[in-house]
Length: 99
Image 1 (cartoon, rainbow, N blue to C red):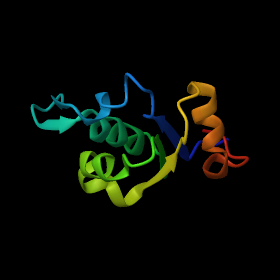
Image 2: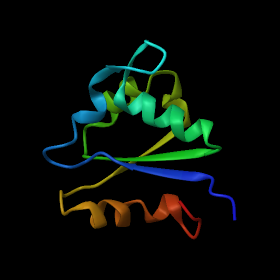
Image 3: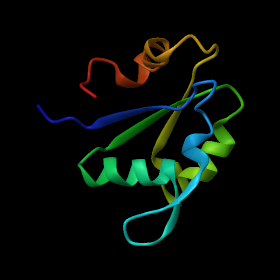
């Protein structure tokens, strides 16, 4: 079984700005946490990346994804009801595929 989808949950009330922070990657290049996570997933063979965000956060997260923004499907979690709810909100993206 090949896993082709990755799901990043980024809608947590107290954690949602973490993926927007800039770090220095292992090559010494400044990148956002989100861009680093996406690059790692793509280098592992992931073909589709879904990111669960709060309503209204999509623009900031697209900017943080940089060059990879076009490869992301943004999924909204309308209410902060926890991690399981965030995964449930992505059910249309994950469908019956392993992720």
